[in-house]
Image (cartoon, rainbow, N blue to C red):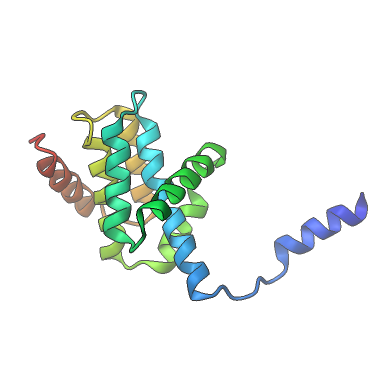
Length: 155
């Protein structure tokens, strides 16, 4: 048992090998997908419109085939169900994206929230928390919300 604990500790503190660009891209894709799925899951009445908004957002951000998108969304849904917080996902985005690209992710999240025609309070809370973890300025966060709302025809 002591050996197992030592192995676990060593794996936590040992420096990890540098990730390849392909591994970094996969990490970015999954982190983005999980955050989009979290907004979808925040609504108690998840419908096909929100799922389509997640897929559309991922399709516009990443050059993936339809089957790859389906697998990514499936993996993101599983990962979101088992995740305990947003830190791993927002850290991946903070490490790889500039402010403009993070803002586009936030706007895509707003589009998912507005996809079904209404904004649930929990969706708004999840978005606020993620935007804060991504260090998106409040004014930019509100502008992204307004653009998504206008695009959805809700205002």
